[in-house]
Amino acid sequence: MKPGGSDDRRLVAVVASGRSLVATRNAIDALLAGSIPVVSDRLTSDRLATADPSPSVPLVRVAPRNSDQAAASAAFIKPETATAMIIQDINPVDTYAASLGQAFKQSYVDSSHRIIGRIEPYNGALPGVGNTMGGIVRDICELRPDVVFFAGRSDALGAMVQVLSSRVCPDFPVRIITADDAVDFATAVVRGDPALRAGLNMNVSVSYTTLAHPAAWDDAPEFFAAQSVAALRDPCEYCYPRVFPDGDLNDGAAIMGFDGLLLVVRAVRSSDGSNDSPALLTQYLPRIHDEESIPGASGWISLSETGESTNKAVPILRIAGDGQIQFIQLASSTGTPCVPKVTLC
Image (cartoon, rainbow, N blue to C red; front, side):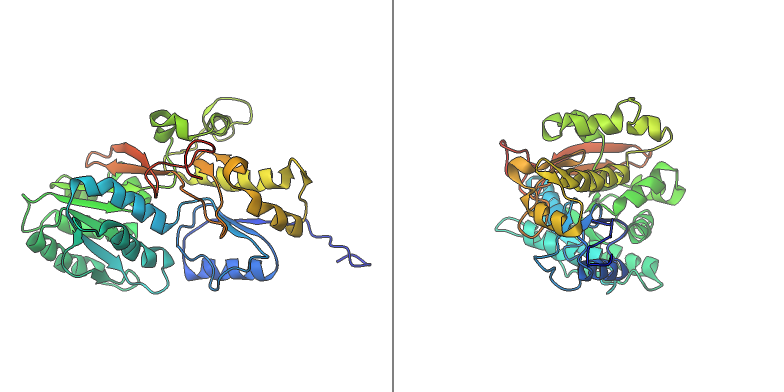
């Protein structure tokens, strides 16, 4: 503080990235306790802070929550299935995995769709995950679900796919769907991991929701703002391809990082004047909704009263055994992503 009490801070907000772990949540808690607004670009755990955030200090999210991704997964898979099995990581420090399985169950189960067997647990923080997956795969062969929902991280998903390559029911097609952490699994397949490719080529398919993907821009352009897409795809002087000529947009990280910063910049440079302090930004952030939505490259960003992205676009991808990633469709928690004045925001 300057003499006389004026605030000399230049930090007005923090864009939080990384993984949905307890340590990340603790860092967010510390920022909120210091009255610094936090914008999450890639964190998807349904609960980002240890305690419920104070309405006086915003904690807002650009990415779709786990529950939104699970709802999009269920909406995508339900027309083609009647039964599902859930595999659940019970690692107590991984808040990403914790909320996925239950959210999928809530979205999937109805009068014509059911979960078969028990929810199959494993602890990704302990050794022996591969052995545990062997037992789970035997249950898959016995119960033969139409789809397996995997509520866990890429490394454990990889362990299961490897075990599936030698399962006792090779003629039974195993269909897996999971959430955005599977991008690391997909990257390993693309790079030629022989064990993962062998598993996928044994009548196994893996689809996953992701936070953003450039193929969605061409497949469903009506759900994206052209100016934000251009900043990441066009060869202009300050656009992404010129600034990062070796960059890759396919994992969605750069797109989500762009959108997190875009939200903060738009909020700081609002039409009503510069919001150049945490307090002024705190005042403005709740106004980002409906017609004041942010035109993100990952889809329009409209914040709910609790700071969540409402009806955010959710791309669904599939990784094949030859390393090809296929864009399947653009979904959302309601089925149709947010577009101001057109669809729910």
